[in-house]
Length: 309
Image (cartoon, rainbow, N blue to C red; front, side, top):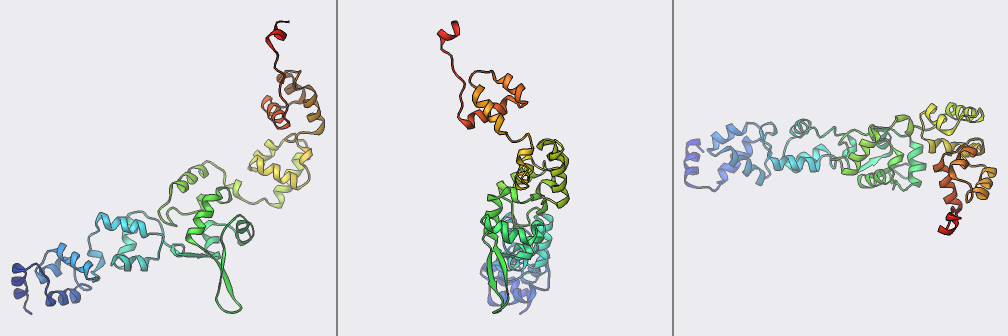
């Protein structure tokens, strides 16, 4: 049909004709919206609107993004593959990638699927397979098996289960190893986790090496305190204390109370000032009071009459 005739019809009616729709389908993948609008004789807004209603794929690079479109992309990003997002939004994969880059939504890898394989997890969080399968699974990570054949299978975890585990076990992983927005728009708990991790040493999350264990043992036997060992090895005091217990060296550190110290505290806590006990045992007043509280010992409270006397 002649273009002039189509334009003439458009002036008389808002309804799309079969000829216009057919022409739109033919022109959509080849030409810019402005060109299609001129040929059909309608506004660019009308072309975009009709294309969306008819699920006609326009040439993505030329489709104007609305705020609503951007909100949808943020919602979809990280929860489905780029191909699926493109299909849902009626755009090309190139248009989706380009817009996501401009919006700084972060990279999209295999991690943006409904399920993640064990290999994905290793790369994603930079942790080894044994830790995921043994320790993390015992802590509640819902690892599942999927059969490929009768003899082969692989581990996987759903996107939702992984986020639940990470939220409930913040001390098990370092958020600095996780690219921003790689699992979708980040929730408040993950943003706070990133802030906390930014102030910590990466060494705190690394497993103990044989050399570090030997050094910790040597330092404790040489008379160093747990605090000094922790600083030297760039570890948390609690982590050092745990390793010493495993090595059977708990009694070698001043961090732990000895039997004779506890006995002295029981006998003298009620009658001797805390400051004097602190000097005698070479422990802080806070440490003295904490241990007394754990033992259920309380200071004797004098009555007014006893104080006057």
